[in-house]
Length: 88
Image 1 (cartoon, rainbow, N blue to C red):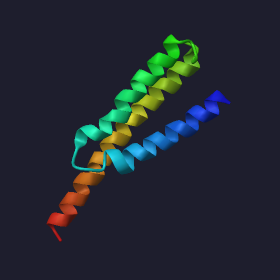
Image 2: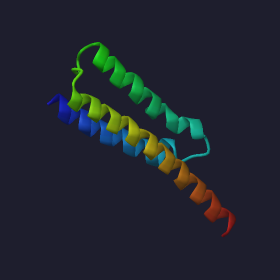
Image 3: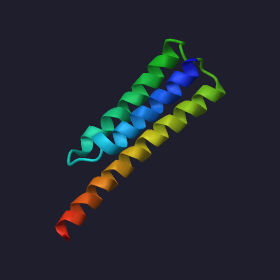
Image 4: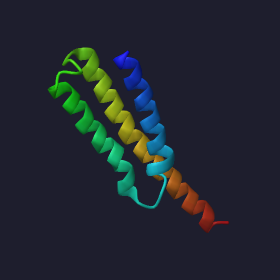
């Protein structure tokens, strides 16, 4: 059950990051979820809520990687929106 909640929360936070937080003129705003995700996962592993095993490490690395990828995609969406406004 904890894994299901983690996956649903991860998807929600990644979509929020890409389309809301990173898709604006403040590039640092999108980095909040990326940095919080690192702190959150490390704290889960330190408190032993998320056991330190290979599956959880892979899951954590994938989530943090996706978080930074979605941040970059959100920035690209914003820059494309600005370019389209300039050339209209």
